[in-house]
Length: 222
Image (cartoon, rainbow, N blue to C red; front, side, top):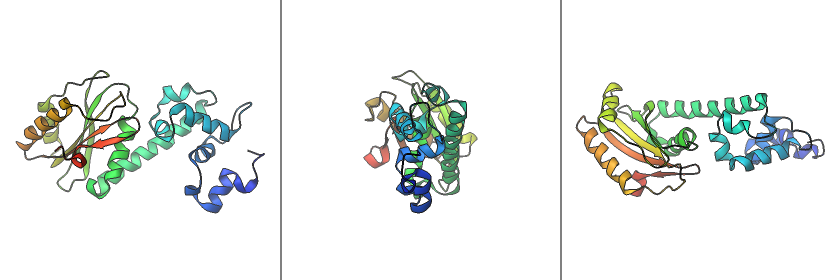
């Protein structure tokens, strides 16, 4: 870092131009603070992002994944995990304080951080109140890499327990293939019909991969 002109060092650049002016690696370098033998902090930041598949991979990384990267000791891993948890909590709070449709991207960002890096398939539900604000996010079913068994009765039961007025269904595709299957579409319609019986609307079903999200509502599949 000392070899970089002062005006171009991440800290000085951030203070003079604002955080938006920094590249992902520069922002990460500020959190890491120091590099390792033979590797400056900016180079280490670039290596971390490369090993994890970019910023999305970093935001979804867990302790085990970070621990496999040389140069990330316990202190650095703890700080990164703390920052990522703060980001998750911030998105969660945003969804609780305003209707989800006021910021659809926040919903996708939240689900990306929750499910994008899972190695097995998870089916979860966002339970919303009558004003479409978040009441709770619950992972209800877990499966293998290719399939999850979802029981409509359990989804209805939890909707009643939360006194939900609406829900957003979601599950991840560990394969990375974002396109919904015919089984996904049939499940959505089954849950929609089941929840209608208790006057709970299905607002969307969002499929999550490591790098993107797909909305059934935006595709016209609901």
